[in-house]
Length: 307
Ligand code: HSE
Image (cartoon, rainbow, N blue to C red; front, side, top):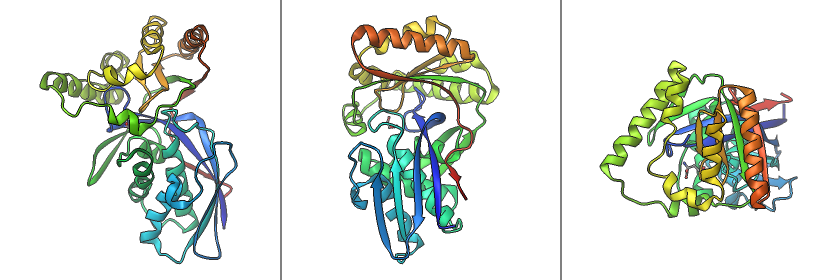
């Protein structure tokens, strides 16, 4: 098989309190890519979407991930990648991770799988470095593994897949762009001990809540006292979305990755749909364009089709 199609899911990094260490894959939206083995070395990248992203491999996140892979796979290999982005760049839904992770999973398949999932996360992080200036795996890991992942460490990589309970995810993407690099730049470099204690209590609570399928504990732990107070200022309507969604019965939620998307988790689909109505009302009244999704957790990660 010399050509395969790849479906790479959107992801929600941080999951509110777990900055850079927790992430979740979604069933909707997903990027679609086609990757082929070339008869000659080198990368050719094309986009069939309208986003005008760079196609030079060194400047393209999928290209950077594939180049990192080729350093270990051998320089004599070549790939042709066509990307159709359904996850809008700059949305906070792991758009760059989907490109990077999807590309390396597809390439690995074409090479008859010489690399482990952990290797693929390592390669795909080169794409994240290009996009945001730093390596982080909280979009890449859930994108490749599916479900909810804890990234205990990236140097060395230590990824823990958590069994995710049934949850509905409502996402609103106000159509403004927040660059991850900018959203990282504005963060305070120091954290007060009392805030750190509260934060690691929440992270531990969220992980325990997910593993014990304790929805109340999940809801109580969806609190971020370090990152959200700084970043939420960049997102119009943030406080109203959170407050009114919880009033509808959502467990909780917050900024998706570095924003501007906001996500809320619910136990029941009808609550998730009610949350969507609330989100739509808020942005319609504010006169800001938006897109919403009501979806569930993707358990399989990047999917290779046509193989
Ligand atoms: N953990 C990263 C951040 C995710 O919040 O900057 C970016 O999608």
